[in-house]
Length: 329
Image 1 (spheres, helix red, strand yellow):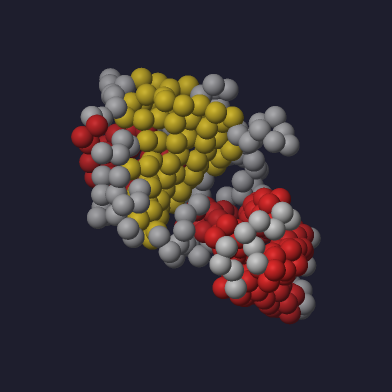
Image 2 (cartoon, one colour):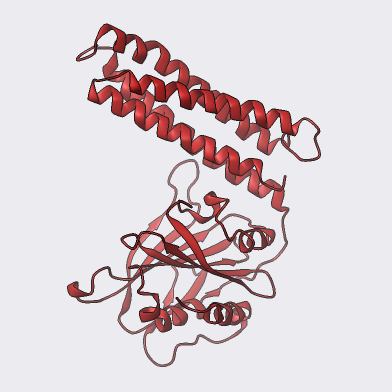
């Protein structure tokens, strides 16, 4: 395992990198983002392999994402990649402070990993509070290892994430340091924002995305359940009555929680926050139990798979709600 010192060195270097010349020696080349929002140095053997705009819905662009990769032989196994995502979204400095204290990955939405599958190796934040560098280690060595950086900028933030074969970080550390310490945003971080409202919106979106996936799963299942093919009468009753009723309750509960988050209904300053959280948690727990019970009463594999997938999504809603309840609102 690497010691914390290399991470700290990177953070301190990044703290002032916007005013320093690019580093990395004579090897490699300077990479310029398409919209001139940032530059970085590519070590020798690295190149851009992909570029995309995300997301395509609702607005023209929320940023661009670039994939940088090192050319290695097939025998080397997983080729290391670095994904650079520019996020055109105002981001509070408090987010990095918040994440730096989340050593147990209690707020998984912010990290994008399953806390049951990963643990934090190291976290280091620069003195200005605008750069966070971290290492996520897989509990199963078959999963990839992540070495990432969040940098607050004038346009929002840059997310730089190295994806490597578990245990390969020491092997590529020098090259990753070249990339990370050479990142130069075109504009420095400016006015700060309130953390509470930002976190509320992040979790509202996570709940909405999961609810949308659940609704899609329900629609897909109902499209063929109505034909009744392969279902016994009892199974048909479960799938046409109990199943959609349970899903509808989960969707409505997720919407209420999301709206409550952004409207301040769950603020710690409100004496009603505790009872409101408790009621919503009980609603989701009831749905999860209902779907699991329905699944136990099904033998038709297609129907059972649909219910099991729905139960998994409701379980995710439960987990998100538990995380949201611990937010400093």
